[in-house]
Length: 371
Length: 98
Image: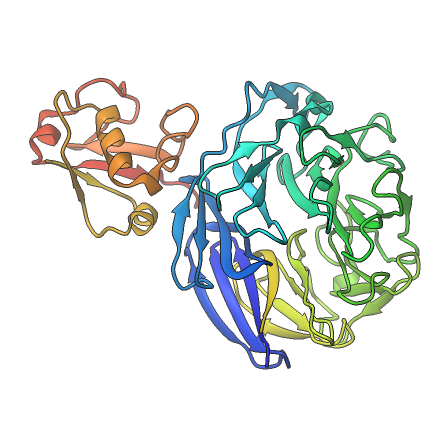
């Protein structure tokens, strides 16, 4: 019998939720790191008991901790995220230039094959790599060569929040930045190019199809099809069939194509999930109904998944890192809300139940299957 | 010995209870105290002073002997009572919020 372990980062600490593969009965452990903002807590595919956590706050800055025993004990590792050289300036909200300033780590992405190799996406946007389990960090500063003076912060800051590693090709990495767009390296992070062709941000940019400046909210890939990417943009759900070289819209019949997370089914690479949000100024679900939308056709045709989710008076949001998918035969989908609920579906989204109701606002959700 | 008190979050992070005691050579300055503190408790690096600039983080304040030392020079001697160990050097998370 496998154990399911869900790692939840919140505004006021981390929580570990545990169940068996039925995913009906859960235990809740936490808060870990109480009082700290946990933008991300995640496990390592090649060593599931190696966990990494980004804890931060306005008072005390950034701390990174790691566990080698599944979260029983933790040790601090390096929090020295030092930009390579003088990072210069980026565009501020009002269009003026603003100095680059490190604020926090938004996302930690371990290598699928090496537990000591991890990437960290930070605010102000940059990508760091550690090859010693977090004991030291080095910026992959070629990313900032891609017109970074034109990058600008989204509402949550100018954050590198998404890191997608490519199976069987460690040299190819995708990242996404709000509000700069999507970027790809094909040489392990030395040089980068923007991959934003086809994105349209007419409401936010003077040039709707600019090379950079797009507010990409998240990107996902099924490991069996590394050239096909799905994107939830500020507005629009997008798809690329050529590793980001170009994108086309697949929002179809969604009630709103604004949202934050996007996920792909573990065993059906054409089945994707989004959580529509009303608009950029109304960060809650349309009509007060919390609905996950599923497309089994890789976009355009969407169905609402509602059974077990609140269908009236619900005004929560679901952040970009707060949706996860497990790899059990009956694929599980998980998401956390700003209202502190974490929901699970053990049947690909057909039926949902809350694991926990009243956590602090959820920032991130990850899931591990332990044999 | 210099006595330093930490806010709750940093006591938890450093795994200490109550004040920490540090040997600091004279002249005892804010910088010398913080250098000694971070040497003894490396997990505190970056939480009190900015990692890159070594400046006090904006929401951190330093109190001692009933005075706010936050805006004193990091290289000025701290009050004699702190140097003598009769008064603590207090590191405070600034009051913020409603």
